[in-house]
Length: 187
Image 1 (cartoon, rainbow, N blue to C red):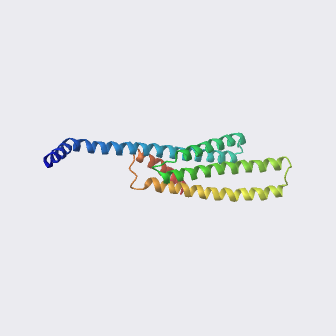
Image 2 (cartoon, one colour):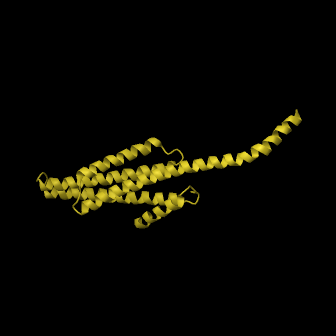
């Protein structure tokens, strides 16, 4: 009986030992690819939402603001929020949280732009007094500053997360380079 157990162990050591490291590395690689897909999905959602929010800020400043486009983009961001929230990013909970916060801030920024546009419209159509408009505008400006500060904090969090030395995913160097550029603008 003892000889049989030893023989089985020898066979496993000779044949199984060769396959085991391969299985382990395949598992690590598969997990790595899955994590990278989640990284890319979360980061692309963050960048897309930030781009939408910034576009509306620029258009608002240049008097080119389109309320209907802003409303469409709010819907787009809501859909991204639902999609990311539904998927839960089981292997990357921290990045999932950062993505959600970033989308929420972008959503709020566009909503503020819409509110500000409505204040201007109300003054033009004599629905509110210029004094009331000033009060409304001051409140919206305060809200904008809060959201910008929060957005900067989230971007910094994202930069720190991606720069962490333990992140060794496929394509991490390209991801880091993209985010370094975004973070440099944020300083």
